[in-house]
Amino acid sequence: MFVENSEKNRNICRSYCGTCPSYDKECGKLLFCSLGNINTEIAKKGCKCGMCPVAIEHKLDGSYYCIHGNLDTFG
Image 1 (cartoon, rainbow, N blue to C red):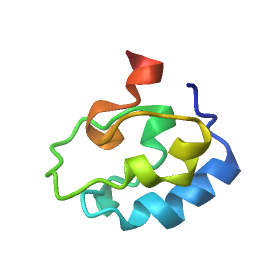
Image 2: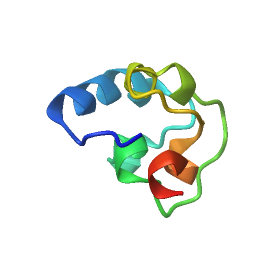
Image 3: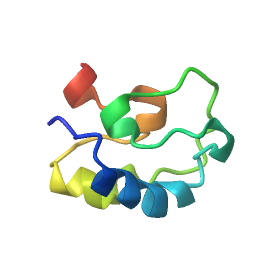
């Protein structure tokens, strides 16, 4: 399902995904489930995507959106 790049979703992402062990704070990007992955190497240190309030609200199924993007949107 499509995730809107809204201020509400960005705020949730800042507080939730910003604490993910795999999140690279230097990349400056958030809301990977809406905007897609990044083009840098990311070390898999754990993933919080499946329990994210944005992912739950939009019934997303997946993990590591920072690496793979949201396959429901970007297939």
